[in-house]
Length: 324
Image (cartoon, rainbow, N blue to C red; front, side, top):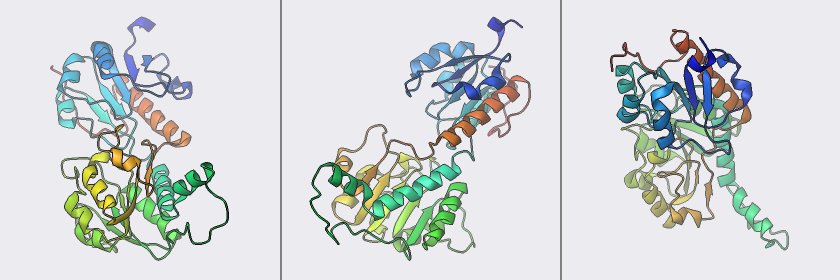
């Protein structure tokens, strides 16, 4: 097979050359922008008829429109844990594998969650801005006092690999751990969601986005949280009703929030931008050099296996022979 006849693989942004060698002589690779941006959907759709595989950051919605335009497509590999952009059943119907990276971002997201919790509890970002603005004139004991994590209760909404990894780290700070998951559990620390919210000083979200988790924390549940509690969201923005969160912060019911994801990202509710008790980051929770390399390498491995006629390492669906 000549190089021009090799299958075409799209990576929707630019990745380091160090993850690409397994695809050498197996496929041609085309990549998206090299400035950190992702390839626009319109451009992906334009290339779709030629594509045998796609590696994306979970930003690409794989739906009827895309699948209809891509008769040669065999696999879409998400560089993420989340798969809310993938219609798994429809992809199986079209003979297309779906994969994700279930473990690559576990440790990094857990570390990040503790960083967000510390930032909230000790008011680190606000203090940093205070110093940078030249406002600090003298030592002011008591003015910047925050909350001690030791002895506080952390409620984990979602208790998969990330939630358990957060719990492991939080115990080292002397925190009491509660957890909630959709399936009732007899494990120590399990509580139904409403009871967990009422009992927790810090609530951290670690659930995937699906029909059940959309606006899981709505106005009613936010009101049921302990007065003076903090909310941390490094899962998916739409798990929280952002307007209701703003209201809970504005009235003082919640002491603060740390948000790495947003309901309509990259748009952020304007009121959040003005709150000194809110920590905001641009969806970076899982992002370290090491985790990104691990995730991309798994995606490349899954692509090479499918091109060789094998099943991916961690297929999320069972494609039918392609007839469409």
